Image (cartoon, rainbow, N blue to C red; front, side, top):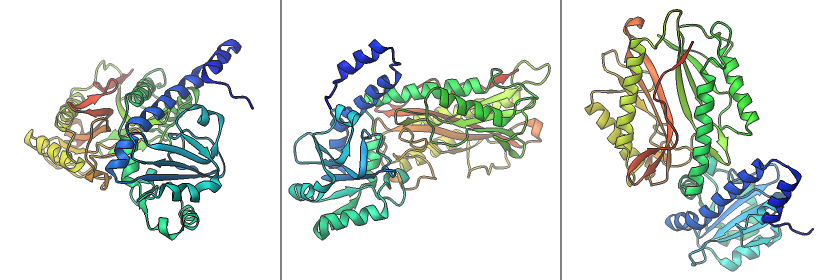
Length: 432
């Protein structure tokens, strides 16, 4: 079949009146691919001392990097193979995978058949062969048990002895970002916060009629309408009371006086967000957020400022966590376990500033207790972090019990520290 170049394809799209949105998104993701292959891949392969990275995909069982690498048609088993042969550019090859968009991407140097694998590897004679196997990071664990067995059988014992986990390589490749990728993430972030703030408004909510589930399904529908994905299931729409969360995305009807929280994220062009918003449903006669709730929110914003001003690149996530809690405690805040506030007058805090971008909970360095391996990774410029925290402050209406305020928005780490990518949460939304 005669190939059509991209310029001709663009003209055809215009001439027949097709929507250009799919083409626009493909061009953006392909630019990300080219930039990451040129700028990030050589750096991270050499840092991790892996001179060949083999990523296997099977029909119906694709590696998590499948979209990132350009997809393509896999008849049975295929391989994306990256080889450091000493030149500045990493050699990029595809065996057993083809397809129009993959070939048009101009991202690969060589296309061959699945049967060439043994000869291909032997000719390059790599010292270390990275495979996507990991006990701790799901995204880096794409190779199945039988897939590893097959690779060992094809390549033989000599090369099997050189197999190593590409866990850290995967994390570094996915969590360090080029400018074109940040532009995509910013677009995803705009979708995230705009849809979230619409969801917690009278556009969607009528007190006394709308359920938490209604709001969640509205958000799901927006994903469908805007051709977006999500790394989460049902968006979390929940009511918080004196005893904690009362209900989440259920048929519980939203009432006046409710304190609502929203936790969700969107996926766009292989980039995924994770963020929260908060709203108060005004009681009859009220025009603003009660002072006690506003005070609790203001405390959380102060905590966020300390967190973002403390995070620095060039040290591990664990060191950053230690520095953050030291700064918070120095400012008079208490450190607690999740949802276990102290019985005192302090505002208590727990942070979970996890990696974000390649998934809602990403594979990069993570300043969060629930990612123990990623706590050991060094924070680098261009890492994306979800700046997530929970601040617990007493409110008189609850007999001194503490209201949990969740704040979460996505940011990038630069040489200057933390910088926001889209407008972050600065207020309690009001539902009339």
